[in-house]
Length: 306
Image (cartoon, rainbow, N blue to C red; front, side):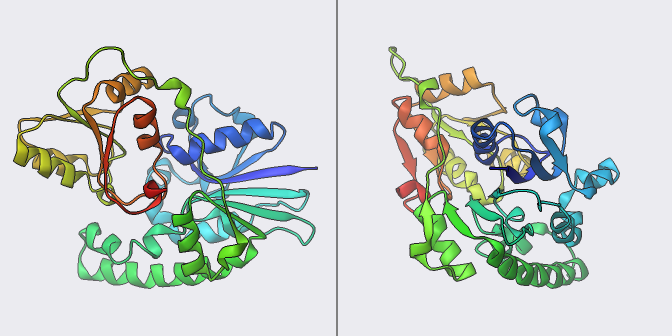
């Protein structure tokens, strides 16, 4: 049986979806991996470079590859040009795009879905509000996103089997793509809980946020709470929202940026509690916190409730 894997991006820092991709790559060691953009410096050595086949957008200048929002009109066509005709099974590891690859009638397209296209559906119109652009660019975003939404809906029909990372995501697949709930399987993403253990020493007096720093993560709520209560908060992670969050932070808030795996495990084990204020599709970091013997303070919605 010939298997291929397709994944949205391999040019950003590794997160939960990329960790799942690594597991899929180990399960199917002969499978090539197709992706929209690839950056060897970011992807590291987790997957052999010879297995990775980026789209034609890889040939664009670096300043465009680093700003994928400018490439949105061209992404659908780029993934539709992948030649997957020689495979029996295609596993699309998708949070937005690659479920829309075109496969032949003999090929089974299994989509492991982290989320429907978030900025086009459940995160709309907050996505537009956060762009902080003028009226002309705002109007262009509305037009472009409307077209992408149509493509996204109809390309979902190319999937033969849906697998969601949580029942929360399954309900959104049902909502936006009109797939029957009984046709959607749920397989939770793996978490390497063996790497996280409770510390024999006492907890330290700090709360912890460990996340990419994006507006939808709602880290500002954790900062506001700790500002008001005068509690120490360590924010580990990096992202586009860091500057705004640092401006909101008081004297008791500390930003560490990205941390190593060993430092991550240490911070999780020693924290008084882990704060998870956003609505997430699943949430691997809270699983790691609980494996570390640390309680989780979280928003009671989304995949985390499972």
